[in-house]
Image 1 (cartoon, helix red, strand yellow):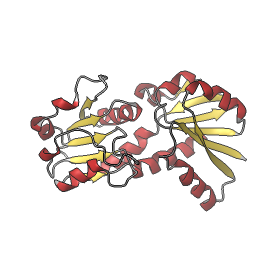
Image 2 (cartoon, rainbow, N blue to C red):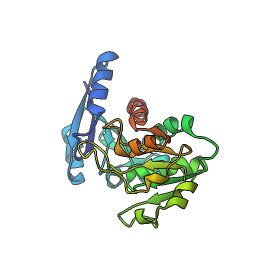
Image 3 (tube, rainbow, N blue to C red):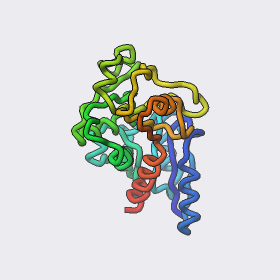
Image 4 (cartoon, rainbow, N blue to C red):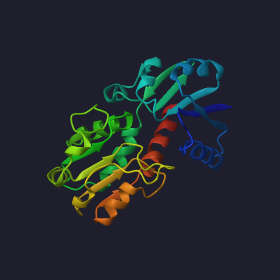
Length: 241
């Protein structure tokens, strides 16, 4: 029996196990999907040795960037992005891919309008890098906003003029994720309009405080559930290629 899994820490927020178990049952696939919570990535090589039937791993926060040093090979897109959320394992060798970018792009494109030419990306982690890669591909000028000092722009600098210019806003932080459902990125939501598109990579809860603020002001809103489904199916194709 083939095995697949998810690694990251913590994993209590993840939808992957149920998604793939339902898929295996629905499509009569003789495989298992397990959770592998790794607080320290130094334990990854031991995990791969201990699980010879493991053929694929999905990767979630906080390991999407640092896991690259443990891989034998990188897909070109993942190398450009600098983050990995999918690993194919063959005879103990690991190749990293980024399917977040595919899921994000496919779910974003139907919502874009001509005036969505500038974007704010909230957060600077691995998911943020995939989003930046997609926006650059789509010729959308993006500004990374971070509280960690990893970018030139901090939250206190976001004002009415910035929001007027940047009508696409993507939350790539875990703020608002269950159980901290009342946490929210610190931007001046009162300046949002119906021209704004708010996209939240968080999917649990379905309606985050970030999206709720957008809805109040007539903005287009989208959570990360479709993106997750799309990237999960892309992972499956890679694992079985």
